[in-house]
Length: 155
Ligand code: RTP
Ligand code: MG
Image (cartoon, rainbow, N blue to C red):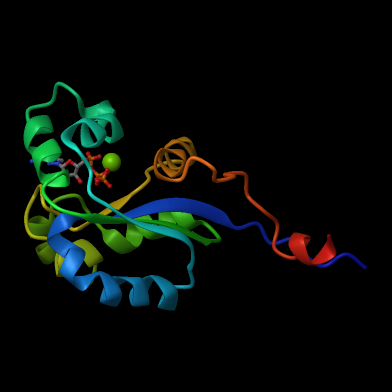
């Protein structure tokens, strides 16, 4: 009999410069939240790389300061996986504005590890296509199709 197929999903998490000092603690929370950490890189983004990564926001008022913030120090990029990884990670990190999050979602990771409306500590891909693009951005050799759990064991 075939084992049940449980599909896992991958997403890209980034521990941003203002939360880097808490990286170990955050990685521990990621693991305790049922994610596996598949890949991890510590990266110092250039302003050009930060602009490319956040290209969807080009032209917005906050774009120059977002680029300056994301290239102001090292970040840790992580490919993390579990079922419904994309929406679950977004839920765990909480709203974009870390200051408002402290009032409305005090337990979310941005409320705890973020600083303000811009320096919010953590990133999460917002859709399957974003996750695919963002994982390739940092891990160009990565395969992004979901892998059914148990498949590797059958090969
Ligand atoms: P992210 O992409 O980093 O996971 O954040 P998000 O989806 O919650 O928010 P998004 O709208 O994609 O914004 C990207 C990042 O830009 C900065 N930001 N600053 N000052 C502002 O009004 C403002 N708005 C957004 C934040 O660092 C945000 O995470
Ligand atoms: Mg976003």
